[in-house]
Image (cartoon, rainbow, N blue to C red; front, side):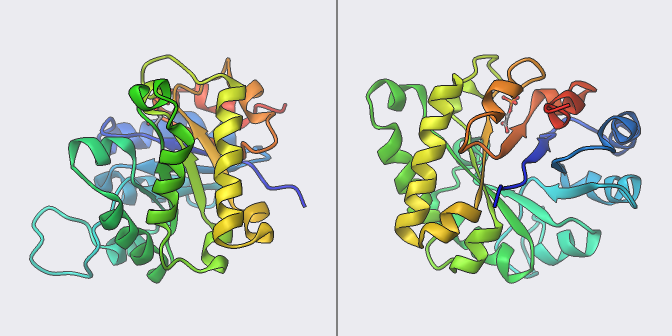
Amino acid sequence: MARRKIIAGNWKMNKTPSEARELCALLAPLVKDADTDVVYCVPAIDIVPVVEAVKGSNVEVGAENMYIEEKGAYTGEIAPDMIVDAGAKWVIIGHSERREYFKEDDAFLNKKVLKAFEHGLTPILCCGESLEQRESGVTLDWIRLQIKSDLQGVTKEQASGMVIAYEPIWAIGTGKTATADQAEEVCRAIRECIAEIYDTDTAEKIRIQYGGSMNGGNCKELLAKPNIDGGLIGGASLKAEFAEIVNYNK
Ligand code: PGA
């Protein structure tokens, strides 16, 4: 059975609630006939307005981050239940910007993954290597280590429904994209790693995205690869170009 592609925008820290509504209005007519799943991952403060703006459409909403506790004295953090109650279904976990700027390590990210599942949120788990790692030839080992650590305790049923985003750090926001072959090589290795941890059935079901300067121009070639099941889109998700990716096969 073919995996359905999933195109997710990662808006990062870019849109105020009013701007978020405007972007939803701009994109609504452009993405409505998508043959792919479409998700907007938005800043916490935009979740409620964006859920409202996409109500009744084919678009689902995700958070960009989440804390690991249920509630309490964690000033500034967002609990899983808050995200669920606001109407989001997805949550990005372990984006390289969270790993780098907020020092989130794999042990912590594993807790986030488990907590997301506990609350019925589906994680989009990010992994990826730095330029130094790629140049020194440790990319695949590094990615396997990230996946194995971040998925500890995740059941095969849970893994089957989740999304892993392969995002080489050197390609994020730099305009430098991994070639389709480079991206495919790592996405295939991720699928093999999932087969090792679980089984081939789970590996066939899990969806693996590529992220890192994916745009209207390069999406077709990337999305044609057998192990690339979608994209996690930063810069290009903030404009009409996002719809070109969503409609890549039209
Ligand atoms: P980019 O970001 O498309 O701007 O490179 C992708 C991401 O960080 O998810």
